[in-house]
Amino acid sequence: MLGRKRRTGRSRNGPCEQAAGAGVLKDLNILLGITGGIAAYKAVDLASKLTAAGAGVRTVMTASACQLVGPKSFEAVTGAPVFTSLWSEPGPPTQGHQMSHIALADWAQIVVVAPATADIIAKVANGICDELLSTVLCTCWAAPTLLAPAMNTRMWENPATQRNIETLRARGVRMVGPCAGRLACGTEGLGRMAEPQEILAAIEEMADNRPKA
Ligand SMILES: Cc1cc2nc3c(=O)[nH]c(=O)nc-3n(C[C@H](O)[C@H](O)[C@H](O)COP(=O)(O)O)c2cc1C
Image (cartoon, rainbow, N blue to C red; front, top):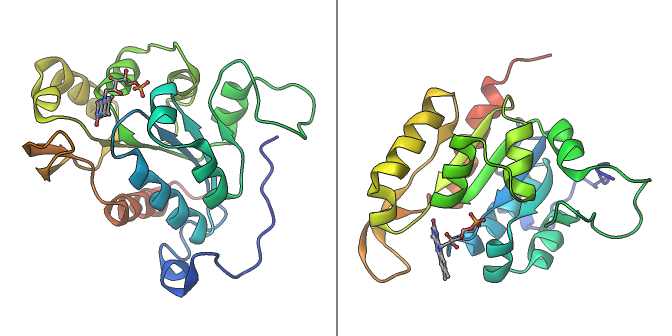
């Protein structure tokens, strides 16, 4: 179900993106979680950059994320099925029945959630598993994990969110952003998701620092 597709050396994204992340991300299994933040559309670009860099990308989207961006966009740029439910596997052909959350967690070498909502941050910090993404994240808690928080400034500054962020940092979860700037809700402040290029650089750094087999 999670097998890698063979790729030719040529990137579908052209020579500029071909160079991005060259080397360290090649053949790395990256689980990309997408949650219901308005910045979800930018994650399509991130998925494309990761794929162009030679990584195998499997995308897991929450129901809220699917309201904001179509799973087909991720499917198109990664050339791989997108996972949206605990209770079904993306369509044919599948090799027998496998529980997606365990299979995905076993497969992932690096886990990235971009954007990471206040909601998923709270769930991961507190071990809540009530849909596919939070369940996968709970299962692969030991994998190197990067979150790119994105939310309204007041949500970011909420003491509950800050406490959850501290909990996750203390557990070794890495963060990129959020950045200051204009937010989708029309206000200025801290809460913008880091740009895909910056997230890519953070993933490359994680890949570089992974214990080598
Ligand atoms: C248009 C829209 C944009 C949203 N953007 C964000 C956001 O950037 N960050 C955030 O934490 N929540 C945002 N929310 C609220 C989340 O979608 C909501 O908390 C949801 O329950 C998150 O679910 P998820 O974490 O399972 O994706 C937004 C909601 C809407 C309707």
